[in-house]
Amino acid sequence: MKIIDAHAHVAQFISGFTSRGELRPVGEGKAQYSTGEIFQMFPPELGDLGVSPEALIEVMDKNGVDRAVLLQGNWLGFHNEYTYAAIQKYPERFTGAATYDPFCVKDEEICRHLFDELNFKAVKFELSTGSGLMANREFYLDGKVMNDCFAHASKKGLTVVLDIGRPRNSCWQVEALGNAVKKFPDVTFVVCHLLSPQQGDGELLKTALAKLLYDNIYFDIAALAANQKPETYPYPTALEHLKTAKSIVGFDRLMFGTDMPSTLARDSYAHLTDYIINSDVFTKKELEYVFYKTADKVYFNNN
Image 1 (tube, rainbow, N blue to C red):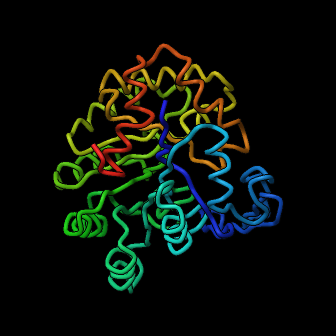
Image 2 (image 1 turned 30 degrees about the vertical axis):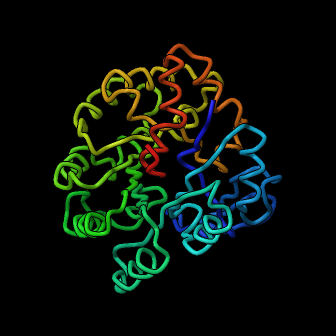
């Protein structure tokens, strides 16, 4: 079966900024917050201070992954030029999204460079209160700032990728997200992590997905398994969330992704594919959409 990983990251070096301040590399794949906490961000075999496209390709080749979509966010840090270079060097393996902080005074100049000069076809906004744009400020997904971002995406024909963080945080604005998606029907939206449900969030996920039944919205399922910790493979709660999503939005709105490299610090790539493939959630035909066809249409425009 052909596979596209619709949610992956490269990083020249860890350079994040979060609710716990700056996030810097300390070697062997470990990172340190300004609070002093050190943790294993990715396996040391993938890199010392960052993760190269070549390191990702090695993982992809070992696991039969054809292509990957390179996304960005505040946690690993913004790496527009590095991501662009990876796509240019390996166009048969990668596509990706640019990112920017819409609160920058020079945001128009930034957008001109990213979307007119570098010609990115997608933009990603990480909005979480932990390590996104709302880590240091609060705003609304359907307010003026994001409305301007979505209007710009509409004008440029960009796919918009959104990580709205986890339930019970101020960033998890499902109704506001629905308002934005409805207001810009010509923009394709992708919501990361299937809205990041945790254990015990089954009914909450049902209610939320029912508010997002629009033709121009898709969901990647990256880190769905990791978000059920301490649950381990074969991740029964994650599978229940997938059953819920399939029943409400449909299998052809879901895209496989891993959120590598960080998720590989906790489990193997094989487990992150096999828990889905070896389950009874999707038929063989449906798996082809989840693992390849939908991402091919959304990100590579080949269907």
